[in-house]
Image (cartoon, rainbow over all chains, first blue to last red; front, side):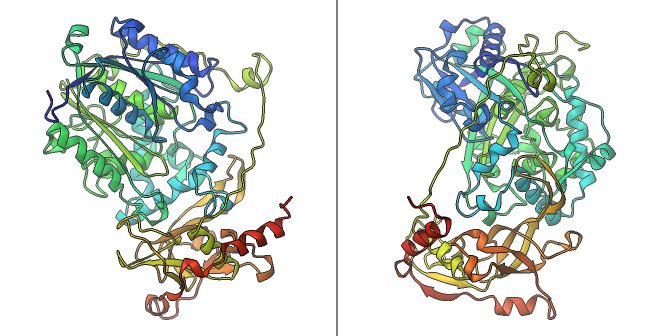
Length: 390
Length: 212
């Protein structure tokens, strides 16, 4: 039993597809690729799965209304209690929280969590699908795009703490470098801070290399209850803390320099996991990095850095794979790619491999024991957090 | 990959190039949907739009949290109490944050940047901002904290929409921030029941010729 009085839940298998700008495969074929790889990694079959959680972000990308229902086949959900969890960009980590409930509650012993996104069908560019997230009466007539949100938030963050773009650009250098060691990565590369600063100016202060790509891909993780998990693997990775929180949809009335909803979510997860000093106890972190500054913004919301202090951690190498607090050792969304819901779940897969010390060329040194993954989204208002332990 | 044991090792997925996708090398199916929506504007936003049509920027005052909030709303999301007290804001404010955006909504590019901004409105509670555009300003001169004012469309062109404000432009700051702060009070107007949202709706329909 965990301190919540609920059953402990472990991850026992993980798999994913390549992340790519445009996949030949359909969403269901991608889903099958991820779920079958996860089952194979755990030496399980579909018949061993008792429940299924599907994660996918706005239907507008795939262009398939009720995409969760459509994905039931590829997720292995036929005839099973199957649900879709959804909090926009935060979905990838949220879906694991939903899977955790399935098992912690005592109702099911196993759960397949599958997240998929295929953004490439949306023409002329998936960017257009984001228009409809803004308030239909008070904002959409201004023809906003998603870059605005990030640019406005990044500018406020920089202004509030006196941060310059060079400090933030290091995140792109680090993550694209890390992604070179990820077999599924879309955008692994060796670049410099100057490359970032000299890349196309899209929406000041956001340059092109500050931005994660649009992607197709899928990821899957298999969860099991204590008692069952140990029979499946001798290296279960326990989900010891979960938390999520939403802030107001009146986004322009929020403090854009600090994601307080991420802090709320993190405090819930830390409390559940019994973590008193997160900076000492979290060995490895996969914060959500759709844009460079977001990784830093989120590290602060997660209480892993002082407000305005995360850029210095990047400058000091603390966030490097061999640093004191490796951040996005996978390569993150900036390097591996950003098929939205699947990208969040990719972070959970990375913790699974890292905490089992199976991450190969990406392995963080020092036998990490505790990791944290976080995602963010909806109308810039949700934080989703999972704490995992070996 | 130098290390064949680096996960994920089983890796489905077939990347397609743009040329393969668009050049007929694979079979694709194209479709497009024209989906139309007509949104009624509710109670509070109807009042907001009616105000805009009349050249006024309205907020609502919530006595339970002592906040003046914008856009107006009929309930306070913090205290969970009803609100029925509209206030007229002076139409000035300060740039909370901004961007110089060279990308349109469909990812096409533009030479002259759009300047979206969050504008904290004078007369509303601290931090109460709205999304709007800056105009009539050199993009290089825009800065956080800049004092701005609403520039309205001509009265005959207003239709009860957020775009009745063309944009916000800088105002001179002869006396520094004190002058603006002194003017930054909201004046009571009415409650929601004093606004006839039907007037806005039917006028809008008439302007756009959509009734059928």
